[in-house]
Amino acid sequence: MKIAQIAPLTESVPPKLYGGTERIVSYLTEELVRQGHEVTLFASGDSHTSAELVACCDVALRLNPKAQNHIPYHIAMLEQVRRRAEEFDVLHFHVDILHFPVIREFAQRTITTLHGRLDLPELAQLYAMFDDIPLVSISDDQRRPMPPVNWLGTVYHGLPREILPFCPKGSGYLAFLGRISPEKGPETAIEIAARAGMPLKIAAKIDAVDQAFWTDKVEPQVLRHSNVEFIGEIDEQQKADFLGNATALLFPIDWPEPFGLVTIEAMACGTPVIAFKRGAVPEVIDDGVSGLIVGSVDEAFEAVERIGGLDRARVRETFEKRFLVGRMCSDYMAVYRSLAGDKRFAIGSRNYRADNSGGQACLTEPAA
Image (cartoon, rainbow, N blue to C red; front, side):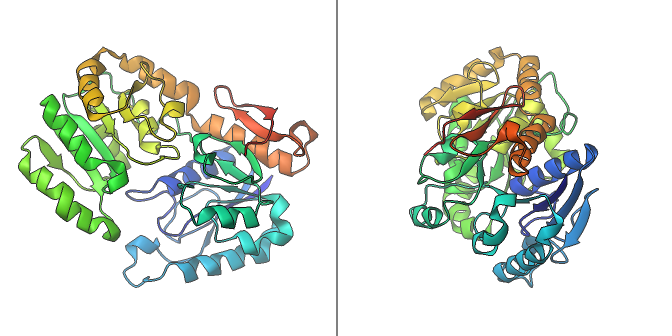
């Protein structure tokens, strides 16, 4: 198939440091190319891919101090996509909602994976206006706030098998990886580690919008507790050591997390996850196998004491069973083929839904 992948321009594909959506776009693109498909990637010019790269800006916008407004760059990219739309069997968008007015004429050859939160009040009216646009969720829980829309399926993220190597034993510290923001709970992670009497290493980026939260809420806690080490942003190579050597990953989120890419990155290393029961956590983590799901700081403290009883080899096995890139690619290919008219995956009164354990397709009633 001839497939276009349209990525956000905020980070390169793959990102040099932090960046979940662009990382998934990279893994999917490379696997599609490996399987023999003709893939064109619309992304920043500093991206690295075996697909045809259409550079829509010179460098990732977050790394370009001159790019004060990101929207013009994305609008220009979408115009390039529109002009070339007839070249592709399927156009796969990863840019939230910006493209909706642009793709009306060829919407039925597109899918849009929604990577972010959907519970913001202003979104419901907008999605109701574009209820014909084919959408894919990254967890079933992500759909809950949405009005009736054209869901084609849920496809969980997947990683290359060898991207993060298995580490059979942790080194006695807890890890927090991601972004410094209120919804991610870094201050809660510090509280859990302090109560457990364990070292905590925090590897995270700080966006400008969250600088005040860091300065007022998190940094004083880091300075107060001698067991806490703030590392900052890390790259993929550093991530393998950081996650692999951890006794557990702390995931104390306080928002409806659509997926939580870092949780399966930890699983790939064999590192179990202690996660609050929010959003997609119960879908991603097998409680008692790949991690422990908790409802409070008290339960998280108790989980730290129990986490050593989980078998790290089984954590890795769970990752390989559920979250490899080949399964993700298979699920997306089933959606692509449904758009291309393959009657085995016909879209009509029923919607495609991936069986995420094995990558096979089935059909279910539409989700509201």
